[in-house]
Image 1: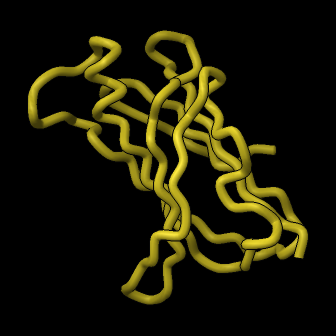
Image 2 (image 1 turned 30 degrees about the vertical axis):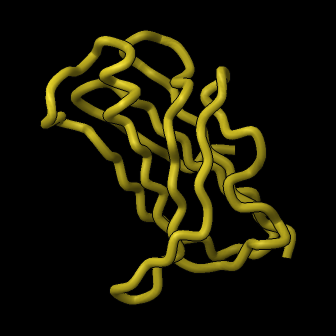
Image 3 (image 1 turned 90 degrees about the vertical axis):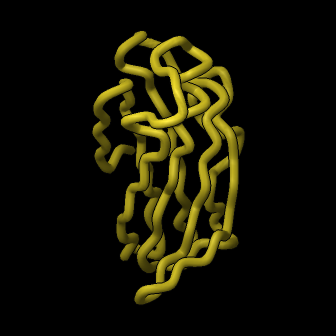
Length: 118
């Protein structure tokens, strides 16, 4: 298999990459999920390496959990203990063992979107 997974986060409210967001990656099987990776976004809003490299890649269902709360607080876009978007989970499937999957997050304090990128 030569597939791999990348991601990045863009702050659409500020029009900048979102630096310093912790991202957790889980492999999902039925009702259970196992954490297999953890990374943080750099100044470009990306992780320094694929969050799931080719040598670890397996087809299946995965979940990225973006820990957005600390970032939103640090940038002055949210405050308090209870945030509208403290964490953003995205569950998705990867079925092609040779594909590059790219799952970006477009973030604002009160909304987000994602898509399969390239």
